[in-house]
Image (cartoon, rainbow, N blue to C red):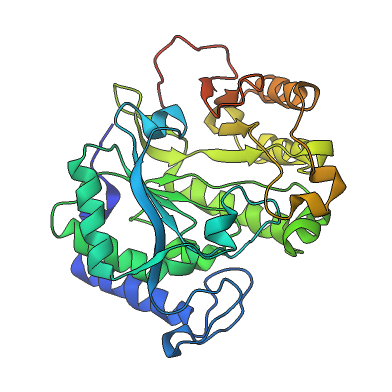
Length: 326
């Protein structure tokens, strides 16, 4: 397969058009489904708390992502401050809720992308990036003009509108979204998003339309495609079965890669909800792992007894075979 990132084929006019459209969505802000209409370019603060400049918590090679994302050299991970979803149990609450981070210019972010590439990482991994979309596109353009040539990963909550996502077509090669909730009862209770399920399903369809199933190079490193993350919550509150059934009924299961995550821990305000005040059990996780296998999905699971966030491959019992993509 062709390993050249998509963004290297964009013309100057295409870049400029995407940047202009992205900024038009940022003020008044309708970049995310909250559509808070904050005039961010005039300094107003909306739901996510972001203003008119990039704020980033950390930048480093991450070795704990899914195997084809981290590979051997790590994923060049950039954690953006703030969040448009703000789950009460967020595992990175210091960044999303408590606003840990420092300001960066577009040029500084571009320099950091190139710095990560020079360290040998396999990709640039943008974590919770939606609310900074215009500035990120501008940074990728700048970095590409100075030699950036590795895939970009869009690592998000999955609470995304299709219009902003369409601006990422031809820029993003790997989508790594969450499917957090299979029922709006949970999304409203835990993050006040009454429409998460419908929005999330449309976003997943748009992402798959752009990049297709996950594909790899000869070393098993992801180069393009969609991989869906799902964090299993206690007491069935993620409604996981509904998510898996949606994927089975709307896609060829062999095209779907799922990262079934077992590392839920009660953090931030989770203890305000009794059902979320503990880790999940093997009895809660194992049936979902079996259902993924039954439906024919590809993907990654975690051995819950380890509680070390390490991933195993895969639902189809091919732990020792090289990864291949269609």
